[in-house]
Amino acid sequence: MSEKEIIDLEEQFQARIDRGENIEPKDWMPEKYRKTHIRQISQHAHSEIVGMLPEGNWITRTPSLRRKVALLAKVQDEAGHGLYLYSATETLGISRDELFEQLHSGKAKYSSIFNYPVITWADIGAIGWLVDGAAIMNQVMLTRTSYGPYARAMVRICKEESFHQRQGYEIMLTLAQGTKVQKEMAQDALNRWWWPSLMMFGPTDEASTHTEQSMKWKIKRKTNDELRQQFVNQTVPQAEFLGLTIPDKDLKWNEERGQYDFGEIDWDEFWRVVKGHGPCNKERLHARKSAYEKGKWVRDAAVAYADKKAKQTLKEAV
Ligand code: BYC
Image (tube, rainbow, N blue to C red; front, side):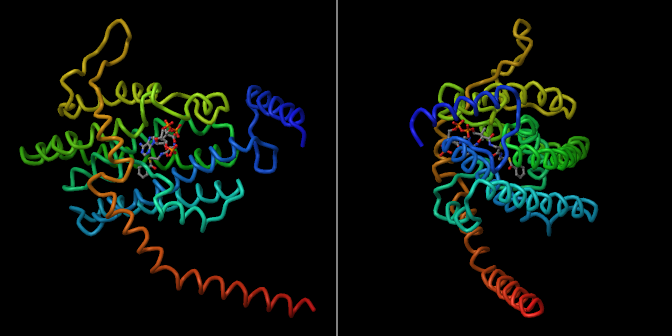
């Protein structure tokens, strides 16, 4: 294809995006658009799968049967989200094996938030309330992202995430209305999860490498800082209702802006965690690699069974 033909195609592609059309797997797309989606959707899928680990670790230790059922359902939903998202990524021409290889080798990232330890039951409440709350804030926007398979997967995922957020908030509410020790546990969980939750939205708009292009292609509908601000505005009144204190001395309502001002995020910590040096990075990756290796016999059996079935069908057809 000549350079002029490619430029024409790129202009037509941008015009489709500007008209608000969805891009589908068989449509022409710039190579960078395809690669950006493989990167973002697969990192999102990895986050769902790795995100099962910290909470899954608490399924055997829930304080009641009711809590166990809800947590089990939530963790199972996350497996489902990972699977829709891996399927959406495969429509861009990459295999599941390659995606896993990228996760296991450390080439592909997953959300920084899942590299923090889950120390008490209150952390399960804080994760549902804050982590799923932040995830929804980001993902509701993604239901209108320009790539069709991703946008459609996000519609279903968001519905389930809102249940996750409510189960977390309900845990926090119960603890906050409980004994002195329970209230202290809730406050301690908020203290530890607040800043990492704000980091989930990614670097500042100034430091973000992908935002400008992703906004043009309507992959992102709002910037990292816009979503982070929206999250703070929504969450502060929820903390007040719980009677808990957000661990930020610079947090205050700004009458002029009609938004909360908040303190500076520790970006050194963020990059340390993203680059593999957070409190649980090694443990999380080890758990995923080991699950993959232990699941080999299941994959082998599934392939052997599919082969056998295909041969049988062929024999019957002849
Ligand atoms: N952690 O240019 P930027 C969930 C990376 S919720 C690790 O702004 P982009 C769940 C970024 O990848 C979490 N890395 O990037 C919830 C890039 O590096 P590469 C998953 C991060 O993509 C509850 C570099 O920093 N949600 O699953 O335009 C229970 C520069 O950043 C992080 C999603 O993935 C981070 N926090 O914007 C269970 C939503 N932030 O790739 C599960 C979809 C940034 O160039 N993703 N980086 O090596 C997005 O919306 C966007 O990818 C982001 C980042 C807003 C996260």
